[in-house]
Length: 241
Image 1 (cartoon, rainbow, N blue to C red):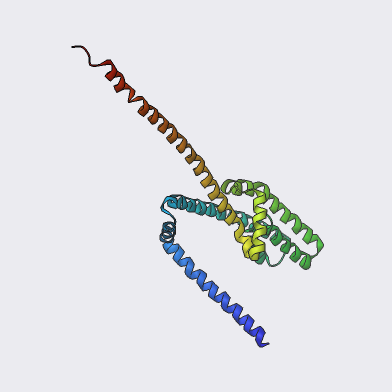
Image 2: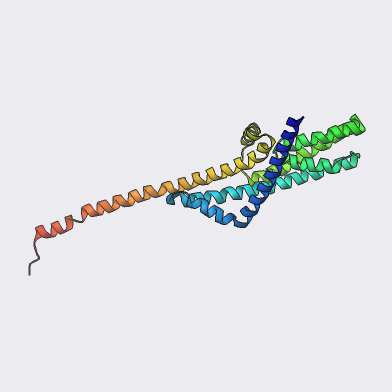
């Protein structure tokens, strides 16, 4: 009994400490984020600082777009399923809406799993017929999300292949459970944006050495031809007066 109490107290203490650490860190990231990032960039070698700074801003832009698109998709999923639940008279509508909203942050599977909870609530409270109607409502909302919202929002804001999304979610679940599933896709989207940015920057920079090499060849050819001109003048002698 004492061991159980100590474990619960330790877990509760860790949760409270983690909450205040996150709150404290968030405040300073918001207040001094630019200075912290500038200090981080200065840790890199001088030649790599510009690319590191550009990559950081590209990753931040991709993360911001992903969060905005996800919030819009989650809001539509939540409102749609809540409306279906209200029409069918399913209880705990607000709780279902919050659960669907949070579940939508896990792409492709989160909102569906959260919608299953609404179906189970309808089954327990009102029977199979209402549960089937709730299932139809959840499928309708998911179809709107998959064929309208995802192509226009996610496809426009974040260019990440569906296979990459699935692999990212799987790796996130294996590494950190539900929290890993929540943060895996935005991290993958940011990494994808940074890799594409660096690849395009490298491809653009690959032309410069060739141009410089060509310019060096022209200069060498001009330098080799330059001594011949005075030599021809010397062999011909000075002009007759």
